Amino acid sequence: GACGSRYRAGHSGPPQQDASGKYVCEDCKKPFDSIVALGGHRRFCDGGAWRCEWCKCTADECSGKNPGPNGPATLCGACGSRYRAGHSGPPQRDSAGKFVCDVCQKPFDSIVAL
Image 1 (tube, rainbow, N blue to C red):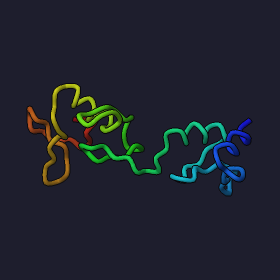
Image 2: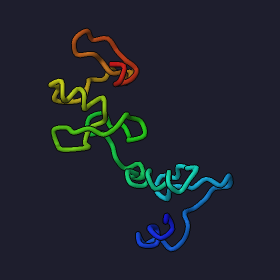
Image 3: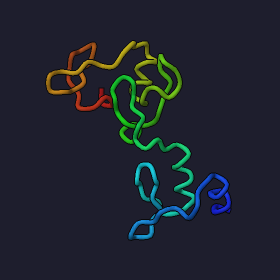
Image 4: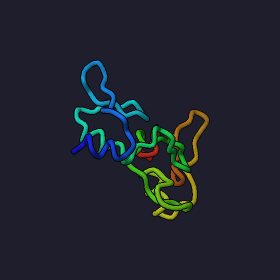
């Protein structure tokens, strides 16, 4: 069961629960309704350490991790799409921090909108 596999993985007790009874990830502190959901999350949780090499977004801010010029899971979904389309770096930003289109120079609030 869930408890046996946790014990074999080196845990000494049940996972933490918050005041509402939800199971809490030890690394990123996200709450989950069940131990199974927590287990599925833990397989991919990096505690917030991962950042896209181009735009520096976190895993929570993007639609997934994609391969880039430096290997698998180095770019976010939006930058991965740009890389597959032939771009060699992140989009430029203007002085307000908005992403600027290479073609029309129009600014966009997010890389996804670009």
